Length: 336
Image 1 (tube, rainbow, N blue to C red):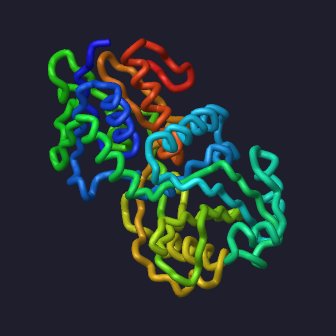
Image 2 (tube, rainbow, N blue to C red):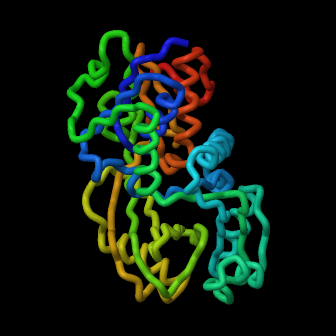
């Protein structure tokens, strides 16, 4: 087909994957982002970046798992820095009902005992009596992934413009005959009344006293937590899910919950250096499933919720197919 002139607005994980997918298909792509490149990414900077379709299915509709499996495959096909060592899910002895519930709600896992858990993660040996192992899941280092996508867009001829906010209305950003793909996240709520913000807080710590090679989820009835290895002895600890649009700093209570629960996973986290405490606001629709909203020659790709990294590649494929052939995914593409 004839190459399209496409302007993507927003350099979070959705915007970057949209620009990358369209650029590698041969379209003329310009990605525009209000923030400087070093500060770009929005709420995507505060994500665990776990490519965990089976774990996420515990509390998400089937479409998240199916498109998440596609997303995992696309990440692996395109970016060699994806780490596939699976996911571990554990719980304290008093919370074993949570582990059994999680097992019932998910699939593609192995129920493992303390010895097998210690084989997988020696530093957790003896700390938990059992767990669930999801061997096919993966993860990426958040900010390395964002940088790799920016580089890949440039390699495919895409143009990236940072530090220049797009004036309202944003659909005027594309030249005549062009297409705008709006990936501004919560900043687009003025155009998407259904969108809400969900606050998430995270910590980044550094320690040589604990070595984990894969994401570990600790189940808890009040405060579940995950720890994701980012390499270079750094770990991302997250994340709160708070139903409010608060862009303020991390609260003392959240910091205590995050760091205290990490200490429960392994006491050596008590000696870790705290490199960062950050908060972001994730965009979400009422059903917590991302959508591609069609408005003429403007597509609005939004509502990542906690599935941004997992679903971004499939969302980009769906949007590209829509533009090229008119194909519409019945659960993702909507006219509002």
